[in-house]
Image 1 (cartoon, rainbow, N blue to C red):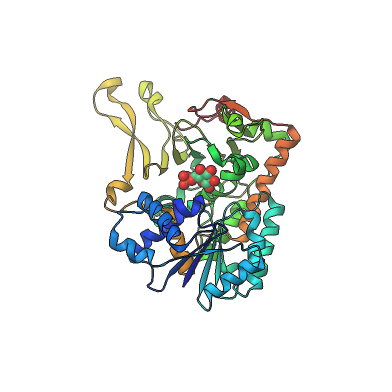
Image 2: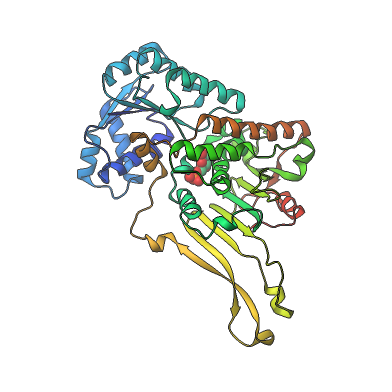
Length: 467
Ligand code: BG6
């Protein structure tokens, strides 16, 4: 089998794909016949590519070992080619020959259709060959539909793997286990018991030299359309009948289609756009792109009627944190009086995905002692630290699991065409409403939790952020 990485000298390939492949090899998970063909327009020879791979693998691969490196580097080849041109396609076709091939397009989405056309024209898109596409698939519903249609001319849907690397993260998959491998939560998992849900993906890093891409996208398209809506789907979807790709993805798509479209009249109350102070300086020009977004979404179905989902994400925030909070309703009637009654807080389930992997449930307890007439209450977390439970296991790069699934033809953790299109449709509605309303991003200080209007937004809904 040949794994062809188009864009092999780029950031994604170096930071994620090559180290992930090395780790799979180190764990004995790559079959002997797997070869990795790095491809880009850059004129390099095999040795220089292997040196580049070694440098990156030493930095990110787990426990660099000479003998594993030797086995891994023997798998590497390099081809200088432009896959948007027929000559490039012909050169690749003669390299791949009759081997089964996976084409990983770690390149700008604007090249996806041209490359797929070439692969088709040179006879490389036949079964069982498959293509792997990185997000973002387009920048709105129209462009994503165009890309998907172009890809579909070459590769059938079951051989098209759209990566959202959040789905490769261990704790994200653990959400499926938490919900569907326990009887405890499902009876409570609805508007009957849940007051609201919060999903936070905060980053401390600035956009930096990624600005030419980022400025064209902004936080809504870069994070919300994909990673955050995927998290929302895993929290909110109905139980799938099985873990097979279509059962899971059918449920996710239904959830996305139940998202209430944002109306122009609500956009000021239900969404916040922000931009950190130095962002325009980094871009070297004035810009209206948001580096922060917070919003209040509703899922219009039986299970979630009336339950707000608060989502927020941004760059240059106070902490790197990915967290889901399921906030339960308060007890319907308090039997506690006096001081104990004001101690009472509602239960919440906090799922930390990054930087630590932790799940905890906040439960009310009696504080030992005789204070307050013998009854004071305090919330204590019942904590399931994944690091403690499975401490020996190293933390995998999300791409390891995903690449392995492509090798094994399992698309459960990949995003189906209709999912991409449904999420863009909802996101486009927000963007259109912002434009119509002329909603400009509010400035926020680097190292803060975003613009103060994000606090006002959630307060207006009678809730507060979990910080
Ligand atoms: C990428 C976005 O998809 O995800 C980046 O394009 C973002 O802007 C990154 O920084 C976050 O990924 P992670 O795994 O570090 O949370």
